[in-house]
Every structure is written in C-alpha cells, then in structure tokens.
Length: 118
Image 1 (cartoon, rainbow, N blue to C red):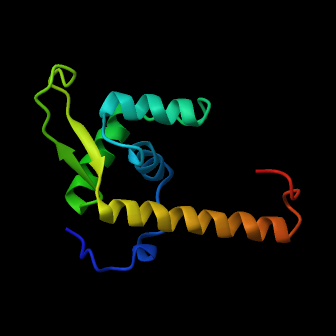
Image 2 (image 1 turned 90 degrees about the vertical axis):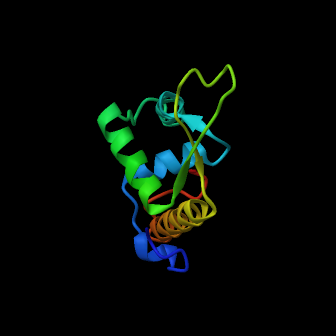
C-alpha cells in the first residue's frame, strides 16, 4: 500500500480510466456496473469502460488504498461488490482535477480555447 503521507501529485497524471472511476465514486458508493454506467453517461458515451479494465483498476485502487470495498447486506446489494472513495483517493482525484484545470488555463492563455468554452 502506498504511504498515505505521500504527495498525491507524485501519482499524476492519472490514467483516464482511473480518474473517471474516482469521479464516479466522488458522490458516494457504487457497484461495478453502476460505475461503468456513470462513466458512459457523464462522458456522453465517449468513454466506455470494459469489464476487464474496470475490475483491474478497482482491484489496484483497493490495493493502493484509493478506494475501499464495502460490505452490504441490504436487499439492494444483491451480492454485488460496492466501492467507495477513501480520503486518500479523494486527495488524488482533487490533485488530478487541479492539474487538468491548470492545463486548460494554459491552453486558454495560448489562445487554444476561447474564453467562454468550458
């Protein structure tokens, strides 16, 4: 497991799939299929996570302490594995969001994006 006192910027840039998984978990816990659907929806279908990519990333993120698997016994769980963002994972996602925001600001300063484009 990574040292949690480590600077999260040392892990950047994140793989696109990893960042989108963290984004999908930012609002609360989800199971794998729900993560896949959220990524597809939030990117208007531009990014589709295959099950191999998704579960490989989830396993590694759990090992590294970015996310945690949640045990649920309620009727909605239906034997699914649920995941949630850890405080360390949130710091990593925030660091990546700041990095991307700075990159967009640089692109704007070089007039690659009009000021009104988001």
